[in-house]
Image (tube, rainbow, N blue to C red; front, side, top):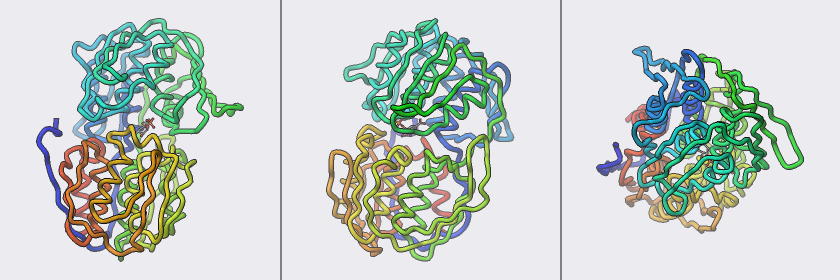
Length: 442
Ligand code: S3P
């Protein structure tokens, strides 16, 4: 994998960002479009798929379990599915690379098939907790042997027919919700997930689009999502909208670099994903929306972002699920704002591709920002728009979002900032550095 040899990158301050950027396809939707197409009977076509390493790991796994998955010369992916219940025993371990989403969602799929799969991953993924999916999937009958601490490598033997459950999410996690729903796809009867705090709902939207019987109601303890098992999925033509998490880097970059004005085209505006836009607007960011439309069952718009002086805020903790992957870059915005920004209630950041609270506290401190670390977040003293000191080497810790966030911080630093290893950026945003050059005229 590309993570073997360290690939450092050094960035000096650059002038304003100008122009139009189209962000790559949404990572969450890309994973799901491959998985659901692989379970439909017949050929699905996927346009705009994110061709990042995480999604390619999902594609390889679906192939290893019997689906035909191929990219055409036209850039459209074609998938011939095996039908729900039709996944085959993979001949080798499924290598999930850096991808938590591939791992947890595929564990759900395998759990209700009569097959056994071994899941392996890189050092980052192998340190992440899988207990959160092992627990409900074991209740459904899967037999799972994990490494100590509920980590990868792990072996999962599915049960068919599996046992339908009603499961209340103990953590706000779309991956756990999706793992249980996907196990429910091939389980007789109704599998139910109750989510006290809403998380991204791409699985629900797309499963319905594929013809699954899935209902969502509001209950006394949160949203109740019910899926009727032994579903038949019909092949689809999917157009993947642009990833709001990737767009977040440019939103912050244009907001903090004076003179910037950019258009970010084709951004998924699903309300379960727009927390960063809300937080940045509270800080005074100048972000407007144009051409609202529906693409592939998801709201989409173009965003126009202009430089604006930012002010510190208390980030509402209830925004956390809708901006969970955007905190690292929000912390960069906070470092340039006037005053002290406090972001709490984001414990989940500790178990992402890295411990993102510790990683960003260390990284920002190294470039001269005053940071206070809490168990569940950070307080950041902003510079009031003055460039940051810079002049440090940052450890990206196999975490693409730390690497990209600190690159954006480098844009607004007096002395160059080096990121020790930027290869992990390819997991979610393969042409990030080309786009950076294009937008900054470098
Ligand atoms: C994702 C859910 C989130 C997010 C991840 C993608 C998904 O993880 O951080 O990048 O596609 O369902 P959690 O479910 O762990 O919050």
